[in-house]
Image (cartoon, rainbow, N blue to C red):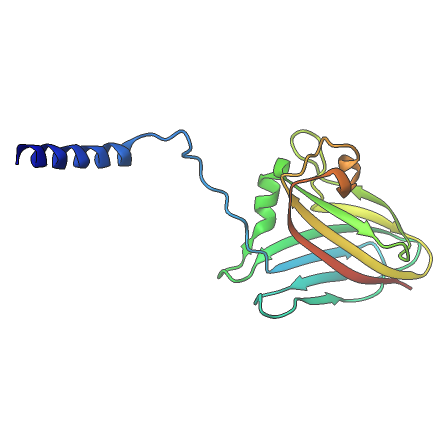
Length: 185
């Protein structure tokens, strides 16, 4: 009976100490964000253009909307907004991307048929590396093609070409990748 009482006290004390101990790994776990909506506002042409990707239910295909055509030979300035609209009110994930700017970077890829050039990052993290919530680009003559936007989590921003927007050496994990069909007319 004495051994049973000792074991009972030992296990109780062990549980108490484990629940109160300081663990070096007590940093909050940064779970992957739920992204339901991505909006890109383009200004600089004759009319503002909005690109939107929305998927509120994973069992259905995402809806992709482009509200107009780009003007030829024009410089556009762009702002991305990333949301989780399953929350009420919607969770603005863009704020987290900006707060954790050293761990995120947007990449932009233009298909060969689309006459877009001079893609330029307009926002940077604390180390001077691009983030890409704000960016600009120039359109050329009439053309059409795809514009792909990719958000990477923990890319290697010091890898060759990554600070210029080359995704090939970025590594990290893709949070989202979206392809928008665009026309310059």
